[in-house]
Image (cartoon, rainbow, N blue to C red; front, side):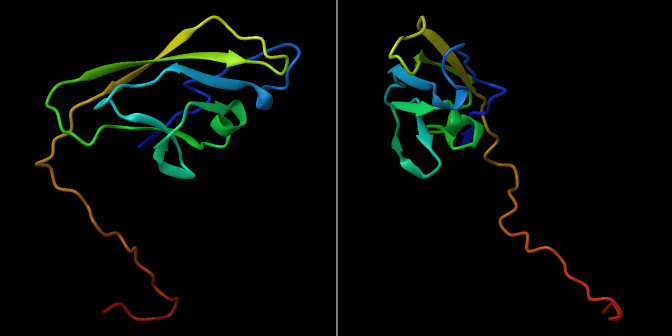
Length: 122
C-alpha cells in the first residue's frame, strides 16, 4: 500500500476549514485496478474521505493482487465537497503502478541489534 499524502492531493475553500473538506470518489477504480482504502480498515474500499484523513496519513492506494511486468496507469475521478454542500469541478487522480521484480530478495525480518554499555562483544 502507498499513502496518499497532502503532497499528492489537497484542496482549499475560503469558507470551509480545510480539515472539513470531503473528497468524493465519483468513479472508483475498476476490478483488478486496486482500491482506495482507509488504513483503519484496509480490506474495504472507500468512496469518500475528509482532508483531515489525508493529513493524518489514513488514506492509501492498495494495488491489485495480480503481478504485471508492465507499468499500469489508473485514474480515480473525484470532486471536493465543502461545508455548504457545494462541489468542485470533477478532477482525476492519476495512479501509476510500476512493475516489481519479484525475483529480487526481500528482507523478511529485521529485529535490530541491542548492545548494552559495558558488555563485551561476542
